[in-house]
Image 1 (cartoon, rainbow, N blue to C red):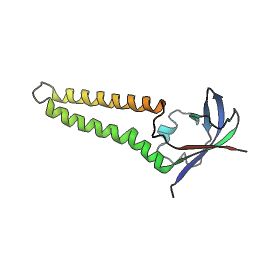
Image 2: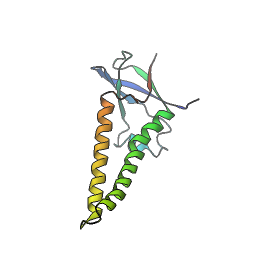
Image 3: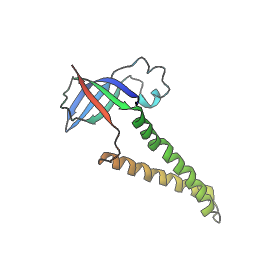
Image 4: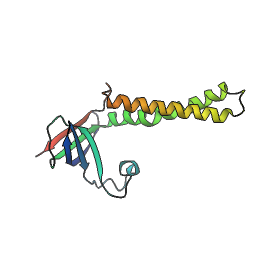
Length: 142
């Protein structure tokens, strides 16, 4: 059985088929080391933008769940693959640019360019309906 990560929130805005949900504060948030990414600002708001397939409206209280496996897969695609791409392209660049005056600089620039291209295509495909979407489950709390 797959672990489910669940949060509750309140709908802030619902228009054009999308809904913005403010996630409610959780007692585990203060101890979590990932809060720098989840809540980068000083205020405690965490806003999530999702497709509105349930017809939820402003002010509705909702529950949001995602499987641990989906979250792990997304983390690998966002962090691990670009890191491996950067490191491998730097090493290959050092081999390819051995006869140049600054092989380290050229290798780094090629690596950074490849990572930018990776992120650009990753997020572009994600916005246009990639087949490998994370299964986010939203349900209205009555």
